Length: 446
Image (cartoon, rainbow, N blue to C red; front, side, top):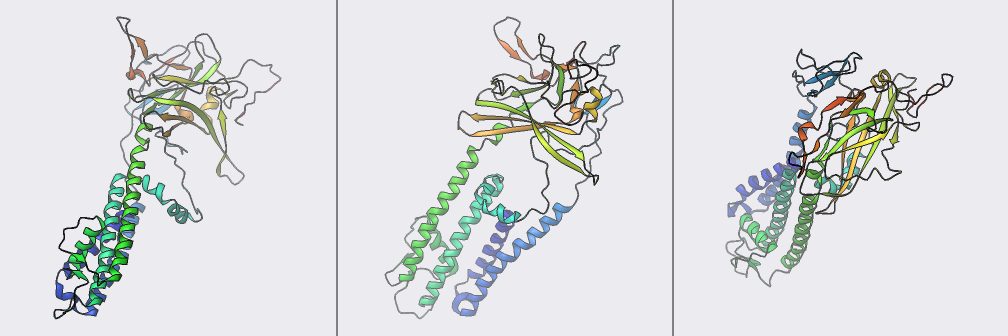
């Protein structure tokens, strides 16, 4: 829409200024009315035409891509966009990953609430007062726009300001009789004899350029009032646009993109000493110059089910403990870390087996929040994991290692997504219980 407005204004300005370049064009009142009508026509009609064309192109379905993504077949399940370079072997238990030799395969698509890049995938349908509420928050709407849109707003704002006050100045000059060739009275605005010269006078006045060839006289009180309003409006416009640019520059959007999540979550022993099952996700801040302050993590499970009308509905989101009771959720992201969710009686994953995990209809959503030290701005990075993106009986391969000369630690990012199997890992996430007591967990699956 912003591009449409800019396009319309450019058409209106250049189309009308071409006609207005002739000083004799405005010698009659009908020509002035025709000029203003043509300007308003292009300013109102062109956005509708361009916006309608843009909306029609957006409704066209995008062409489907036939190219598949690399898939590793782990535990008999296809996993999209992942090869397991450290797991090319098999064992008797059948728990090790096997990379398929048949080339890339495409995993079945599933609906997501949040994609891997952290974008919300919900579609709002019949939202009341959608556009009204959207344009009420116009400042943040502009900040979230691209730089091209902001530059277009800059150009359109200043051009509209100059042209609007140029029309007012030209109207004053026309009504005062300065355009008449046989006028003997003193001019209201000196050397303004066409719309082009009125536009230049408006530009010079708003930005206090003052070339000296065009100026007001004391014979024109209406022009004084218009000039006062133009100067006030010009200061407000420059201040507002400067604030938008500063807010846009300070946004930590690029900083959020420097957070890196593992493509897969794994379920395995908590560590070498604690054999309790835990869900683990690797997180890293790949920016090694600008550090984060007060960074902490959160993990949620969003669960869906089929209702009595055979519709899939979202039934709720449960917070999964990643150590916020003991302060372990506040992490130090100087190097890649592994976030652990211990699967105990309070966990939504408690009591699940490998088969239950694969059949589960849920989505794990992870967030990382932090404060950028350079600007003090808070940001949040997100990602999500579907059941087929959770690998059972694995752990992440170590990637922070001491160098050969034992003088410095090295971070090997080529190992960031690599996993390796755990030996003798349990087939269920529940602790041993009596056979008379069935297993239940907080997710509602069991």
